[in-house]
Length: 103
Image (tube, rainbow, N blue to C red; front, side, top):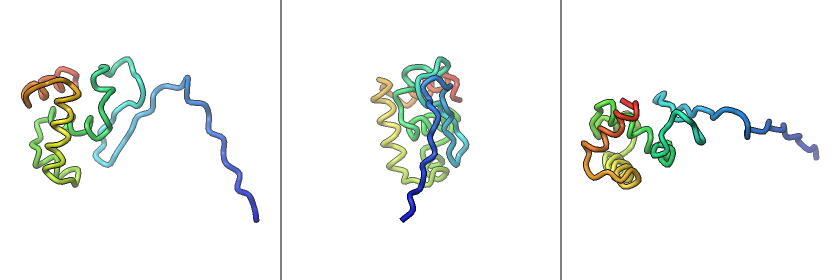
């Protein structure tokens, strides 16, 4: 049996945060980044993605179609966003996203 050598990965501690890119071409910096508000850093990549779409004025139905997920799933992400960000209405959520520069 031959043993495959693993490539050593460079240490990432002192490197700038990487950008996450998915099929919809929306970027969310990974890790703590000075330009991203702390409130947005607690969001999952998908929650951040849904927030970006909401800030751009997309309806939940349009978001579901774009991401290839169920409409109810979009509502679940929206509800999680409001809970994590301590916002009570959709209008507050959209205003927050626009204020953070996502829209």
